[in-house]
Length: 79
Picture 1: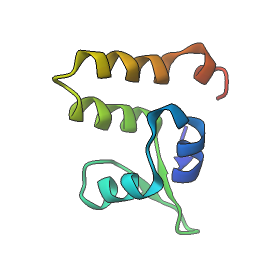
Picture 2: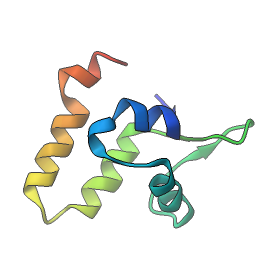
Picture 3: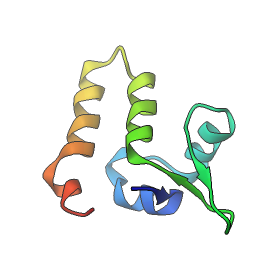
Picture 4: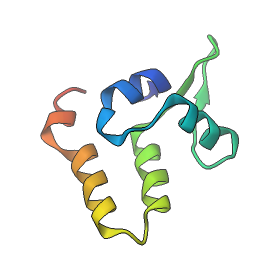
């Protein structure tokens, strides 16, 4: 399920990501995104998880927190 950057930031508030941060990652080629016909970037939450996991690969506590945020019932129930 693709989300616009705004939808993603609102849904996953616990990540403390900003739209600007995500746009820079997209422009630098670190984060996969699709630009729609109305010029909105859309991302797949799985791609964002992968990007953040790569950044935090040496930090087990951060990886646990990411998994908790992305796979907890609270967030799965909102989809």
